[in-house]
Image: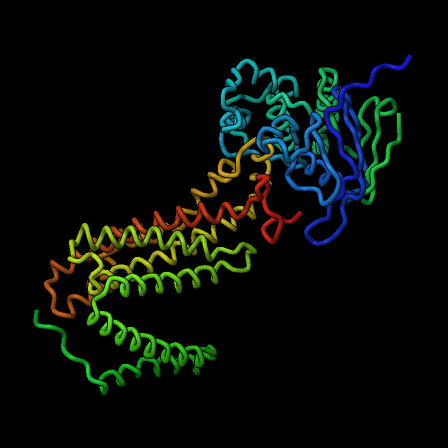
Length: 226
Length: 264
């Protein structure tokens, strides 16, 4: 007997994107992600992976096709609300001057967070511990952290928003094997808790063979399995 | 008032000697500034002569629409100069600059002439045009500095702006720090001149009044008003211009607009 299809969280239909210089970066990309799904996306550099994530986070508009989140076109969402629910971790996360705590709580100071309580110190601590940042003090200056630590801090900051879709753009590129495993475990745990995760990585994550695998090459997306 | 010693045309011609001196330096050091010096000298003479005749005409007619029209014309040219200076950044800024200059300089000039100096009528050309002109001339640089800083910082800190957007910040929130930096950059020169005035330099207006035979103490009072009004107009003008220009950097979907400021 077939399982009932999971409700769709995100759908891209025939999406294309032309860069301002006229280059066709994405060409007819179609993709659907269900809650709890973890998909691994790879492809050569310059193949359009980051551009694809930017379109889903609505940092850019597609030149053609449509993207819907929870059945509603992205343009129908308030941009700030959409971006909190479809979270993007960019390749080089930026930290603002200030403490680790300030950076973790950044998003709770915006208008879009009105009515949402600032996370307590305990949950901030837990968010850091989960990503192997147990040794980092909340009061430490964020700009003093290493690149790998900043990358994990940025992931912790994003997870505090409890996004429904998680777009991770090479989150392990600057990490040592141990931290890399922690991040990949976190991504899997998020998927286990119902978040749809799209993980861009050159290296196969653990369990890649059994995972939904996507390849983006010269702007075209193809599925490899499982 | 005894009035200034009159300068005849012959004496004016003597002043050309200074340009010859500068031209000599240009020739000697091969600066290649000869042509610019010539054009600059001709423009100085022609523009000021024209302004002199226009002022005589305006003083004689003494009509508010004419005074305000000339003031608007000065702002138009100032806005063109500023827009030209920050051109090449891919964001058209003429209208933000023009509107913010119009608003802030009008308010400041009115407050200075009508409320502080209490000239009657407030649009009286003898007060409104020179004081308003000083507001326009001095704050123009501040506005150009602010806008240049705004565009430069958005370009340099593009990743930061986008990351804040993607954490749910609205464009205003994502660029709050940049806006503050931009306004600060515009205000620093006028704050610096408040520090140096009377110690390092004697401002042009005060010099002019003293040369024209005014009581130095009266000249000082006017100069204090001018220095303070310049700080006010600089702050107001920069805040409005930078806020309006910032809107042009974002699309209605709250994305940084693609273009020279934003590579894909």
